[in-house]
Amino acid sequence: MKKFSEYFKLIAEGGAAGHMAHPFDLPYVKTGKDLINFFNKAVSSVTKTPPSVKIDGVNASFRLVDTDEGKKFALDRGSMKPLDLQGITIDKLEDRFGPGHGMVNAGQKLLSIMNEALPEIEPELKKLGMVDNSNRFFNTEFVEGQTNVMQYDNDFLAIHGINEFFQATPKRRASKEVDYNPKVLQSLIDKLNKFAE
Image (spheres, rainbow, N blue to C red):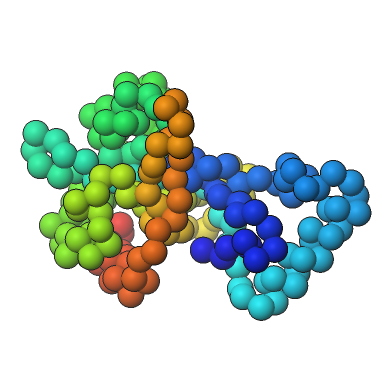
């Protein structure tokens, strides 16, 4: 994930990782000249280091939680709602989102893939610090055809990185991206591909 902290405040993207601010939403962009300066700095930054791609999907952040049947993957929208804190397992998707909600469909597909792959990807999950730390989660984007505005040729899950929740205030959780070994994450993705098909 490209961090613009050299020039700007970090802009976190999506769901549990936070909404991606539009340039005109930033506190230091107050005039048209500020907006032009923002874009000039952005161009300078991306010519030095390629940025990540903004994907027009649904943020579907998920983490490992303990259940009566052992470890399972669960969605987490990052709120203080009890189901987010507990982890939204497949059987709780409708309780959290309501029947017919798009996150129920996305959650069923993603959590099924992840739970099926769990025995095979466990070594990578341990190396990524996700087995013993349920505050760590995959910050992902799920695309199924036309999820929002863009139409994609294939359905896919993009893993932006690994974040970790922390209690920002007594009433609000926040998250930050954590360091991880990209080779370990790539190994996990390679294994996931066969389950995702």
